[in-house]
Image 1 (cartoon, rainbow, N blue to C red):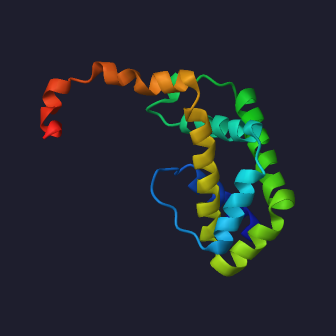
Image 2 (cartoon, rainbow, N blue to C red; image 1 turned 30 degrees about the vertical axis):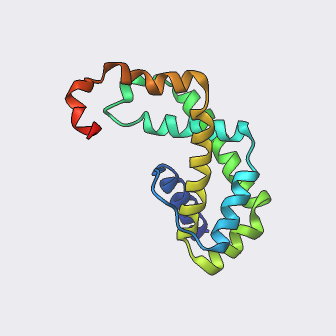
Amino acid sequence: MRKNFLYIFTAFTFLLNISNKPIFAGPFGDEMAKCLVTSTSNRDRTKLLKWMFRVYGEHPEVSYMVDLSDREKKVIDKDIADVFTRLLSEDCVDETKKALEYEGENVMFTAFQTLGQVAAQGFNVNPSVERSINKFTELIEYEKLDYLDK
């Protein structure tokens, strides 16, 4: 049972480290990642993003920006726990077993990182989010960046 908790902890820890770095996985990890992505609905992915927002909101540098009650945090945590449990106990059991057997525990990192990236991509195409992402460009002092044109 301790090993199972290690898998869960590892997956969620690495889920938080989503980046644009290339992900290298073997064929079994790729199949697991595909299963995770295809087994999640837009609603599941929204739950994942809410959870990531909730967790990052705990950082002291930004915690003042996130005002969630303890009850709201528990609801978010429960929602993502249910998604995670369903994915690993129902939807992607065979893919996960094979990936762990042939590629080791790091496969949890790569598979869930892929899921996190897909979830974030879906969020970024929202028109309100796109506008917000680009808002800072109105404040850039482009004359100081002339050297980039050369």
